[in-house]
Image 1 (cartoon, rainbow, N blue to C red):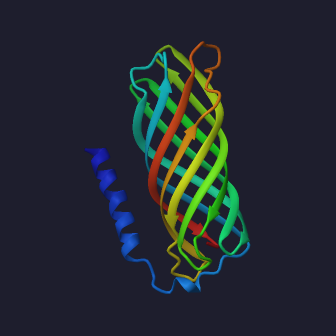
Image 2: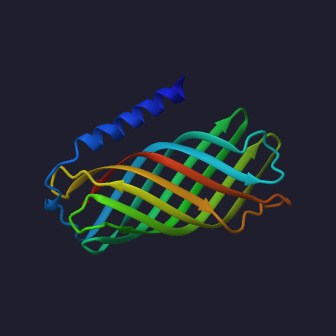
Image 3: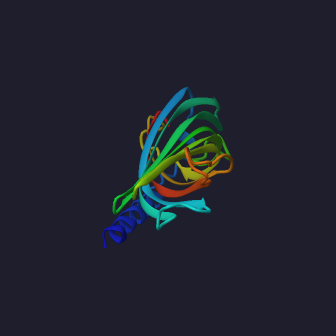
Length: 193
């Protein structure tokens, strides 16, 4: 029941943000640095041949923190950290993606953006008498839009993102290989967006 309510709240927030999108998007001017953070709901999946845990997927709250600079009016480069934590019984899963992100706006005045990035995954599990960390390279993708009621100084940012680990994955101290993926959606808040 708790998860269903959370899903409805986030879906409602994204729907509200889409309806509230201001018509004069041409007033948005991207210059200098930016900072954003968000919270949402994430679905975690782990590709694991012989993990000691009963589950290899879960859904729970997710968050991100990002900062960077504007390269051109329709392109930004920055760093973004996506984090997911889940506890089931006595098993705890901590997942972080540290990404170098490139954001592209189809038009300089467009609120719509697409992100692509490359980064490092740290996937740590503990409990049930076992535990370990699997790390490796990952790719990140994102889609969203900036709703900027104050002409670019502050933004509400509905988003969807996907992180996928594609290398490494050897769990420290074991013969287990685990690669993680995270699908997330939510709402962020940005300064100088």
